[in-house]
Amino acid sequence: MRISLLFVFAIAVFSCKQKKSEQSGRHALNVPDDLEVTLWAESPMLYNPTNMDVDIKGRIWVTEAVNYRSYRNNDSFFMHRPKGDRIMILEDTDHDGKADTAKVFVQDSDLLSPVGIAVLGNKVVVSCSPNLIVYTDENGDDVPDKKEILLTGFGGKDHDHSLHAVYGGPDGNWYFNVGNAGPHIVKDKAGFTLRAGSLYTGGSPYNDKNEGSMVSDDGKVWTGGLALRVNAEGKSLKVMGHNFRNSYEVIPDSYGNLWQNDNDDEVLACRTSWLMENGNAGFFSTDGTRSWKADQRPGQSIPTAHWHQDDPGVMPAGDKIAN
Image (cartoon, rainbow, N blue to C red):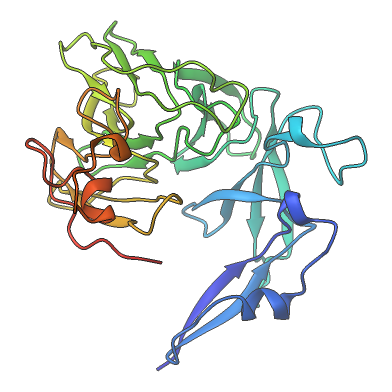
């Protein structure tokens, strides 16, 4: 039996002057013999997609980040959206296995390189540092009738170590990640203030100030990237785990266990982990003021040092995969 994988292929903005063909896009993937890759959508239906979700109608909603780090681009750059980035809705209306319609749900000046989207009923939750934005389509016409900044104050503006996609949990709460491009100083709708940071700066002109050892209203020091939980009203914000580099999309299973990955481009030590509640994943020192390189012991392997595996109070990293 061959399982077909739908492939959404779009031109990345940083290389969009040289359009890649469908064939070259498929050949860029290493596919097992029992899987088949087919093209479902490509530019110009969408550009530089960063995240997607599927609604109950089978349509795919996509965040575009055409304006990602546009401060680096000269006047001759291929594309820029002065009115802000877009949320697109793609659909295969004739059921031939390819998208044939694409429409804009919203284009918003507050959308500067959004990297997360969740379609939860009539609410579209978009993650775009510094904001977690909720658009509500009250009459189902694919046009937002209401916009709310549910939470704000996350670091990582115009940065990929930023606020990532929300996932609706079986308990009715929303789960999400934010990368280590802090500081993250966020007050929820009930008045609780999260304060988290580290020594990491860079990657964006907006990420020039960050610090560790900050204390949140719960009396704890959270550092680096975070896994978070909040209810749909923006209350009861809680840290579920911390001290990641840049984890994407924490996922709760039906038993309430949390799972996530953590990527790294400094060394070959990426990982996918079960997340212990309140767990310290070990990327920085416990207070966020020192890097793994500063704390590496003589003779300690890079993957072990990278996640502070010999330090007390750090959760096991599991197998570290070089890829």
